[in-house]
Length: 281
Image 1: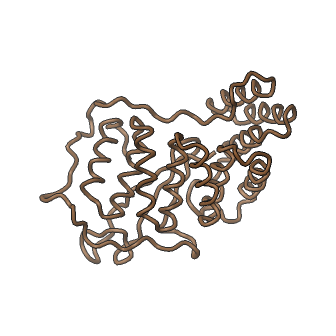
Image 2 (image 1 turned 30 degrees about the vertical axis):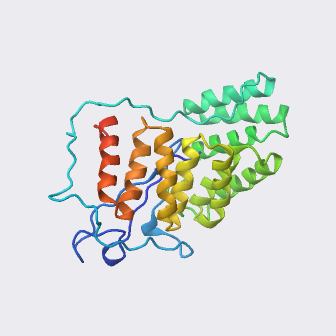
Image 3 (image 1 turned 90 degrees about the horizontal axis):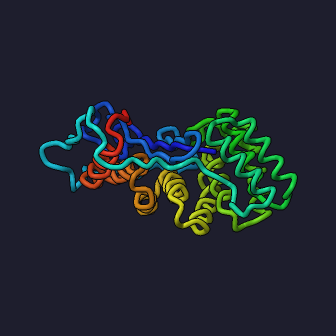
């Protein structure tokens, strides 16, 4: 359903970090939740209910003499890139319904939203008590509709509100189905409901501790709440689980930079640059 998440600090005194007091705010780092269409969490445009990021003192671990990357912009990749694959809902148990779910997953991966939704609907008709078809339909529908991608970007979106209702139904059908919790948390973030999203995202991590996206989404939600101390371990785990995914490394680097841990952030960005040196991000 959702894919990228970015986090921007506020300007000047309210910025997560500042290089020169009252100077124009430098571009702030992105924190991206990586899979399917992009989700962006932008704290500079946070909702009134979302607490601000802690204003940080000048970083104690800032590298002396500047902090430029040693990776040339035209460099070839020096680490193996392994971008996270598209999400799936099929379980691989060989049932007729699961075969339709697998068909939907393949269509979803190709961006054929309408055909994927039809396959997922057929699966749900065969197995109405299985939440997988519902989750697939929501993902395909949001892909087709081009759902907004920023945190709190669509607080009145009827499409996202319907997605939350459908995903809530999926969770009730099977509380142990991790994708339903993950997608529910994402939709709530786009609606600007960070507090509501956290229960779903924590449950997704509990049920799928080996899924890097579950940790990434939780980390993004924590940053949206201003909980940087808790966000860094979540994003660190996501980067550990998917070390070849440049986006996971930039997620971690952005959170570390907002936390004021500049030297560690540089190392994470260096890893990302080695994986994807031609990516402007």
